[in-house]
Length: 262
Image (cartoon, rainbow, N blue to C red; front, side, top):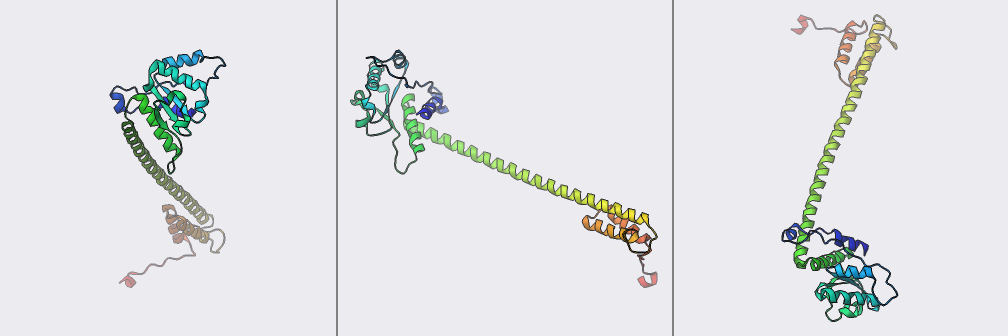
């Protein structure tokens, strides 16, 4: 019952009803959990709560009629406020078995949280809460239910809109991350290609006239330049390859003569 008690206190009345003059919240709900005295009268604290309360909600089960003090509270409140402000919440059993004697004459059943086949306990409790609220606020249950359904639909639309926005943001972040990854890979390849081109240039400069194929010299410079271009085509790789081929004695570029061209 603790959560139900909190739901009553924290329920926000629909704006349409508030505009008609109804309070936006129920306010504080006194919960009688006090150990009742062994004397013949109710405690002062409960008496004060009964006197200042606008409504009395009686939680009813087959154990309720056995309680002398519950019946005493109902009679005391009825004498002070009248029977139209008494609300019964049935949690177990039938009304005839669960209502205290003081309620038998008019049985003001306001809400019922007994399990219903084919309906979830949450839905049953929600209906009971709205019925109690309708009684406390002095409005029709159907009006309050419709307003609550409209509020739930708006909440679903907001959630759906928020989910769609999050999906778009996630997609954008994924695309951005992919672009950053591709950019990082490209920069890594460019850096590696430039490094190979630099090594090729060093090889050309180290033994520019070496005609033996080895680990240094023009031949290795050409191989490094080709590897540079294969890694990523850069201006540096292209230039060092052209320069190496032109200056290397091992690689002769033969251009067709004018006669051959004709």
